[in-house]
Image 1: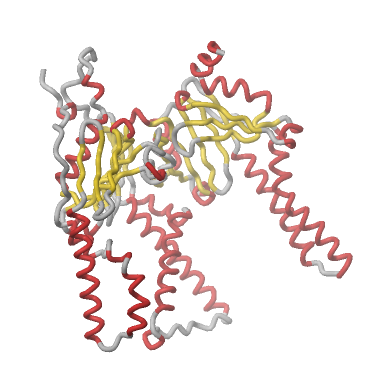
Image 2 (image 1 turned 60 degrees about the horizontal axis):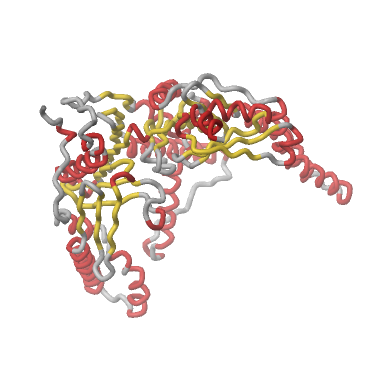
Length: 497
């Protein structure tokens, strides 16, 4: 019988070095020397910089220092992918050996930044189970591989990870031909119009403006441009400036989303979910389907207005993995719901929480406004100043829709093979989990919840953030919900109890 290509486990090889071209990449980016440059700035300032020759000399010295450090780092860095683990060794004086057992590996990501692309290199990230390495780091990076070697390493790591299914002689043989690639999602460029409604993409142009402002402040007085602005007392000028700023902000958000997500494509290939994305830095992320325990449907306040959403996969041992677990960065809500149904079975429509939960949400939302109003009333009686009282009334009125919105976001349901919980106002997140993902339950009940007959139920899982809560559930529904959401796990526990 012929062995399928992905069933072939590569032979154990001696430790390898990355491509020597990575020395040029690290030299240009001053990756190692940048740690020394800040310490050298006070020395240069004390000595003084006189004339262009000194400046050129400093640049050459820093470049030579960067080249030296990059060469030594390359020479002392090796990696090996064996049937048992991935091992990366680095360090000149203090040697560091990072070992990730194959049973801890949860996914592999291949990055191609712009400079790497010019030299035909890639960077491979091996994601491991959370907490599997000292210091809580969840990945091992091998930087500076050729494209062919990067593909070989990715294939080798994933092949070794699945090697257990073919090492048992009694196991049934796998198919001789690899299953065809199935496309699950493809990013539509028109979806970039949603970007101005997503806070994370709006942060990109704001960060750029902040960096530019800081750069202008650091320039010598003679080199600073004349920043005399227009007369903002003119209403027309002010409105025009605000509209221009909003347009630039929206354009920056669209560009930021395009840089990160351009060409996004999600496919199921064999036993993996493979996502490819990026305009400048191209990323190839691979996650094991068998490790997926559910997914999240996230909708920001602005996204809900245009019925858009994002989807992330919850993978055991991978932690939150907001970027590498993302399987739909941005798109119509209907597409997001469809893709979430591919990741995990739909448990059905959400169950609304009892009226006591609505009263509790309203009380918490208007509580601060009532407190400010009371303080404002005392201030009016003492001084006659109405400002604080007016502010308290406004906060109280605004608290009503806020509380109702928070209540409307609550929901939970348990289906035959999965369950879901939902909460959040500014960012509404619905989490759908497989029953087998549950490793335990936690029930919390404050004094006020106990009086209202409510409780908060937290499903403890080994994926994502580690726990997902159904807030202010009727106390009488806690037992039936946890039993239905646990399935056979709860039955086994009851039989053994």
